[in-house]
Image 1 (cartoon, helix red, strand yellow):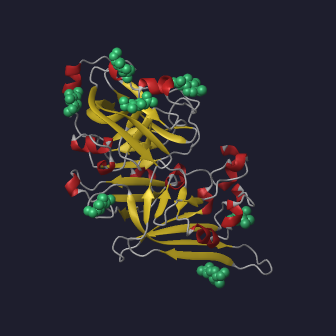
Image 2 (spheres, protein in one colour):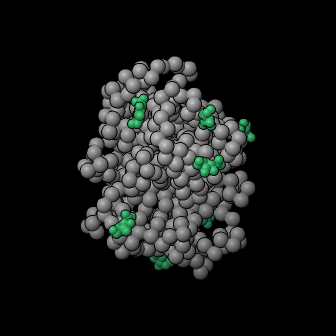
Image 3 (cartoon, helix red, strand yellow):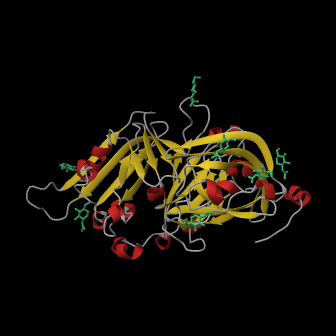
Length: 403
Ligand SMILES: *[C@@H]1O[C@H](CO)[C@@H](O)[C@H](O)[C@H]1NC(C)=O
Ligand SMILES: *[C@@H]1O[C@H](CO)[C@@H](O)[C@H](O)[C@H]1NC(C)=O
Ligand SMILES: *[C@@H]1O[C@H](CO)[C@@H](O)[C@H](O)[C@H]1NC(C)=O
Ligand SMILES: *[C@@H]1O[C@H](CO)[C@@H](O)[C@H](O)[C@H]1NC(C)=O
Ligand SMILES: *[C@@H]1O[C@H](CO)[C@@H](O)[C@H](O)[C@H]1NC(C)=O
Ligand SMILES: *[C@@H]1O[C@H](CO)[C@@H](O)[C@H](O)[C@H]1NC(C)=O
Ligand SMILES: *[C@@H]1O[C@H](CO)[C@@H](O)[C@H](O)[C@H]1NC(C)=O
C-alpha cells in the first residue's frame, strides 16, 4: 500500500480521529503470533510480535533488518528506515532492553503509527542490534504497562488511550485456531484494541483476576495476579491391580508469595523449580522421567482424564479459578516427533513465578482491561472466557492433522 502524505497532513491526522475499536488480524509464522502496523510517512507495513510481558515497542532498523542482525527466521524483514520517513524524529536516546531470552538495543524515535484510520505519534526503538534472530517479523509490540518501558518511551496502547483514540481502555485477544503458519496473510485470530468481544467469542461468564501492582505497591508493571493455589488431578480408567483410582495434588502459596504473569511473548506454562515435580505428580506424571528424557509424552497423554486449576486472590477472601483440561494443553512436534507433545510445564527459574504463555492463553478469550483512562485511575483486570465451540480447536483426535 503506497500513500504519500505530507508532514502537515500527518500532523492534522494525529489525535483527531474519533475513538474506535480496532481489530488487528493475527498472522502466525513459525508459531510466533504477529500483527501488522503501518509506520512512518509514507507508511510502511511492519509485522510485530505482540508481547504483554514488555513495555517498549521496537522495530529492527533498516541496516539490522537488511544484514547487520542475524536472521534465522526464514522470513524477510522490513526494517524501519528513519531516513525515508518525513515524520521520523530521533529523540537522541540509546536504549537497551533485556528480556527473558534475548536483548535488543537501539535509538529511540517518534514516528506516525497508523491503524484502521487512526494515526498517532508513537515512541519506539529502532534496533541496531538484536539477539532475537528467530523472530519472523520486524520487532515487538510491547503491551505491558509504560512503567516498565524504556526511558522516553510509552506503550502503544497507553499512547492511544491518552490520545483518545480508543473507545475503552482495554484490549481483547482471540488467538485463532492455526498456531503454526497462516501463510501469506493473517488467520482467524484477532487482537482488538479499544474494546473486547466477549459476546462473539465467549461461552458463559468471564473470570476476572485483579492485576497486582509491583512489590512496593506503587505502579502496575505487568499483567500479573496473585497466585494462591494450584490443583491437579487425574482419573484412572478401569481398576488395574495396585493402581490408585486417581491422582491429585494441591499446592498453596502464602499471600504475596507468588505471581501468575500472563505473557503472550512466552510459549509455555513455566512454574517454580521447587514445585514442578509436585505439580507433575498431581496429574500422575514423573518429572524426573520427563527431565531425563526417559519419557517422551505422547499427544495421546494429553487427554481430558486430567486437569489443572490455578487459583488467584487479591484479598484472601475472593478466590478465582482458571482451569483447563489436559487435552487442551497439547502442542505437538516435541522431540522432532509428530506423535509426541511438549510437556505442559517447564521450570520458570523463580520460586514466586508462574508464567502463562501462549499454550495456555490461546485456550481462552482473554481481556486486558486498564479500568481507567489515566494512570492514576487504573484498576486493571485480566479476564478469561471459555471459547464457544466454533472458536475452539478440534478435539484431541485430530493430532495428525495439525502438524
Ligand atoms: C511527535 O512528537 C515529537 C516529540 O514530541 C515531535 O517532535 C514531533 O513533531 C511529533 N510528530 C508529529 C508528526 O506530530
Ligand atoms: C531472512 O532470511 C530469509 C530466509 O533465509 C531470507 O529469505 C530473507 O531474505 C532474509 N531477510 C533479510 C532481510 O535478509
Ligand atoms: C541515515 O542517513 C545518514 C546520513 O546519510 C546515515 O549516516 C545513517 O546511517 C542513515 N541511517 C539509517 C538508519 O540508515
Ligand atoms: C548500535 O549503536 C550503539 C550506539 O551508537 C553502538 O554502541 C553499537 O555498537 C551499535 N551496534 C551495532 C551492532 O552496530
Ligand atoms: C521498592 O522500593 C525500594 C526502596 O524504596 C527500591 O529500592 C526498589 O527499587 C523498589 N522496587 C521496585 C520494584 O520499584
Ligand atoms: C486423591 O488421591 C488420593 C491418593 O491416591 C486418593 O486416596 C483420593 O481419593 C484422591 N482424591 C480425589 C478427590 O480424587
Ligand atoms: C490419558 O493420558 C494418560 C497420561 O496423562 C495416559 O496414561 C492414558 O492412557 C490416556 N488415556 C487415553 C484414553 O489415551
